[in-house]
Length: 141
Image (cartoon, rainbow, N blue to C red; front, top):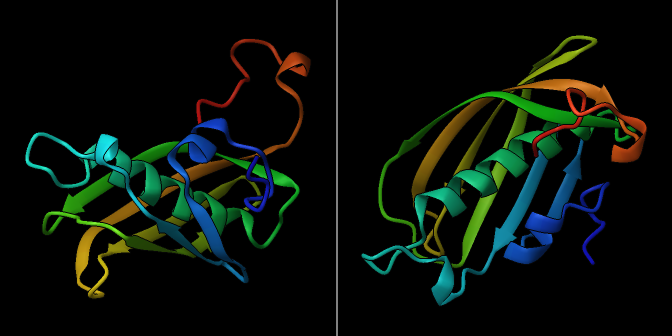
């Protein structure tokens, strides 16, 4: 069970992301994709790459106040080249208000070549259990 992200995230645990760095508005994650993470072209599926970018941005947003949660509001991703693992994602907090975080992240392959770039906006929410929240308050990521 992976809790180095400041919270247990079952989907992240399932994918096997590893937290390398998580502080001062920055994060770094590693991902060693398995064959089941590939698409029909035998490269890492874009959905897995987007999840890696999403988590890198969310953790960068949360790194300055780890007690809050970060819920994805908006995310734009550009794919520059096919991603072949192992992959490294680097997230950065660009700007933060009391309730919102604006971020970016990049994914690099083993040769440190940029594969994808993303920007994202996150709503910062107090952490709590799903049982304490109504169905409209439960974060989707």
